[in-house]
Image (cartoon, rainbow over all chains, first blue to last red; front, side, top):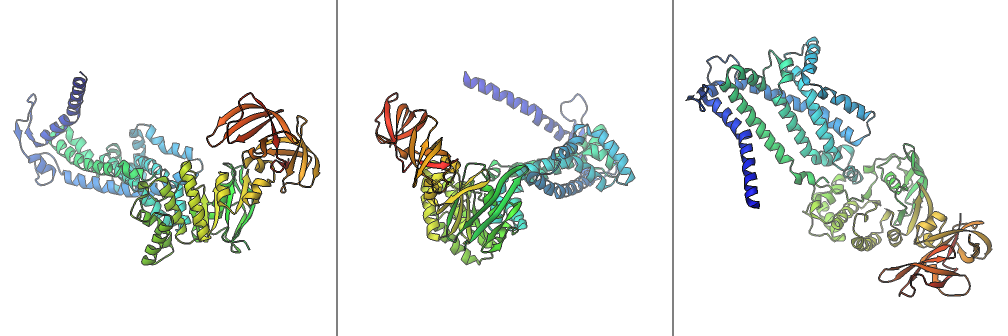
Length: 273
Length: 348
């Protein structure tokens, strides 16, 4: 009796997982290889790699226009990398200060910092666009990076502060008492212990920037077209092309998620306690 | 001349005065304990000595030199923390070797010294383990080895045994004592455990509310308390306020609120005053009749194994009586004698 209930439960979970994860992915996969797929046929009428070759920029033609997945991918990666580097350069020292020292008006600062996240981001970006026009930042990589940094900084400071807070100050004090100066203590004790958390925030920020749409749409157009924007515009008229770019996006994101999972292993974090 | 000295050191955290005008001196090779209840400022005092906390005023003198402004890494002190504070990403070897590397020791010298101190703390062969693979007692041994490795001028210990269970604590206390004695290392030891302070130290500084209230040998602190706080904090003391009627040599006659008059020894560290406190520890109380005795009723009996402890109601005063065997029962009446050489009078 008990085992049959468990079996039924397992089956339900399996079906739900299949419907919610495997099915959409299968459809995506099929679409990217479909030359012709007209309703109501459950499978494509004609299969082929034409759209993949075009999406990857290996062949030019049909109605896709000048932008290939590879160009958009390059933009996406460059923007995500710059966003990560600049965000972490600012957020790591800021987080350390927030974790270790009593910063005046800390609650107010954090509140102001979270403010943009309270509203839907769209009006925030519209206003940002007006502002950025005056500084000639619209349609430039620095402009898009700044737009991505605004929400990314929230994740980064959040995770990094928690990371530094999890490192007991006595570990730093023990180093000082053992003869290490402040900088040596930072390099030999604090940062090595913070690596898992800092890597986690790095991956989060990268993924955020990599998948970001709204900010890029308002600030980046018309010159900066990242992969998510390509995907969005293509999904209206060209499902095959959208599917291929979605798969590229998915593979890179999944690779990063795996990396993240590796470094967030409880064993490593547990050593900090 | 003392090796380390604090001169009128004061530290405030906001409005709270953590350490107030603390002065103390430690001689070379001496083991000094800072003893007091939690929040009395003993840890802050130690952190000021280590250089981890800056005092608001006063100075720290080491070998005649003012080191108040010197950063901790330049003081050549070793420190052991209550929660061990071992670096989890380093092996035992690397933890112990850290201070030596910071001092620029040669590789083979480091290897030799680490081996030596690990032998001293009985952890040979554990070099390649990580701290999480060790028990609490072993972790604290590593922390001790790490602090001792660079042969510091002063060893600072902040409640090093508090996180261990009672049995291990006692075992490590004896070991620590023999290690510190054999190295003749100047040590400042912070603890709230009086037995630990008594067993380990040459000198004890009792702290209360940010001040040092008495400094002396363990025997002095126990036998000649300077004030009511020390008298009641040390030992299992029961204190009864009374008024001092007369003084005869080292003995005084004190009248308790219930009118009973008792003879007791006057603490040398506390000048006699009319307003006095009679301090009665279990060893001052025994069954018997005659002079200096009280009529009591047994209110509670606690069997402790090696002894029996009785709570007695004695003419309005509550006393503790220890006995090796169960001799009384609850509700029974008995007379107890107060040993005038063991009962202590301190000024209020």
